[in-house]
Amino acid sequence: MLWDVGTRCMDKILATEELKTIIESPLDDPKRPKFDAIITETYQMHEAIASGLAEKYSCPIINYQPIVTPPNVAYMIGNPHNPAYMSDYKMPFTSDMNFWQRWVGIRHKRFRFFKLMIFHRKETSDKNRFYAWASSNGSSGGVSTVLFPAAKG
Image (cartoon, rainbow, N blue to C red; front, top):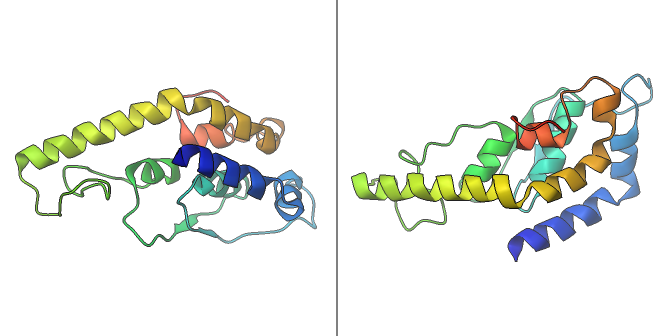
C-alpha cells in the first residue's frame, strides 16, 4: 500500500514541468542548471529522483529524515547500513541489542532487500523512461544502476 502511495507521489513529482526541464536538459547545454549537491528528504520513493539527479549532475546527495535512514534508502543512496549494529526503525529494538535481536534484524533486512530486488523492479524500469539521458550521454545507466547496481538499465 505505501509503495503504491510512494509511486503515485513520485509520478506526480516527475510530471511537473520544472522537474522535466531539469531532467531533460542536455549536459552540454550552457544554460542547464548546475548543482553542488542534491538536498532531499528521502521517504516515499523520492530517493530515486534524488539518486538520478545526483548521477546526472555528478554531485553528492545530502539526505535528511526525521527518523533513522531505512536500510532500503541507505542502499539506494549509497550509505552503509549494518542491521547488527543499528536497528531498523520498523523493529522494536533499541541500539542495545542481544544476539537474537541482531539476528532478527539481519533477517529482516535480507527479506526487505530481496523484496525490493524482486517485486519492485518494474517501478524502477518505469522510472527510467524519465532518465533517457543516461544511455545517450554515457552515464552508467540511470536510476536502475543507482537502485540495482548489478542490473543493466
